[in-house]
Image 1 (cartoon, rainbow, N blue to C red):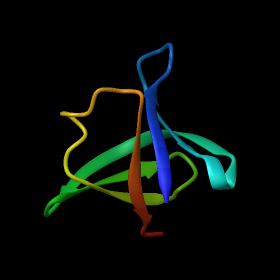
Image 2: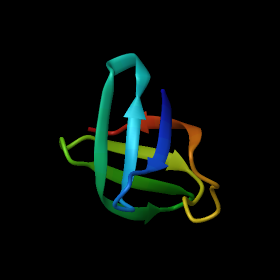
Image 3: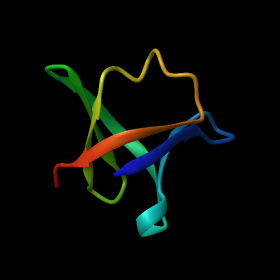
Length: 67
């Protein structure tokens, strides 16, 4: 699924899923092999290929929902 990542005014990382009309704060981020797994405030876990450090935000990325 396509997920747009951006920072809010407070500097927190936000994830927006357009198909679900869902915008949540990223509360936890870990590396799992070549993927970055982010946990959203609503409990969703998304796997994003590569690292988030090199991304210039805002940017749309492909993500896979784990839970």
